[in-house]
Image 1 (cartoon, one colour):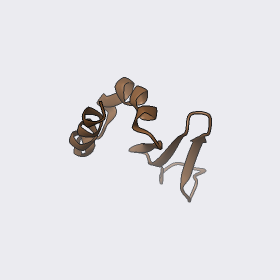
Image 2 (tube, rainbow, N blue to C red):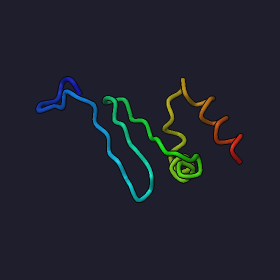
Image 3 (tube, rainbow, N blue to C red):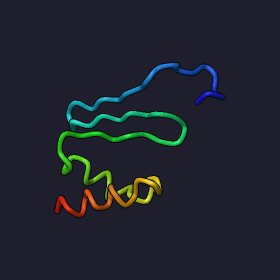
Amino acid sequence: FPSKQPRIGDRVYFINRSRDIILHMYDDRGLDVIAPQIDDLRPIYEAHKTWVLDHDRRSINELFANAE
């Protein structure tokens, strides 16, 4: 968030060890959600799939469709 003060000048990761999920907030446009197994991400995907960026939507939708 370059226009915000104070700001963090490094990468920020939130790690949820009990759910094996990492959130990487890369800028004011969004974040990456990372997990070792696709099934760990499925509830988040189902609840928020409309938030997926347009340029990533096709590949992410295919990833979850192929994992069923």
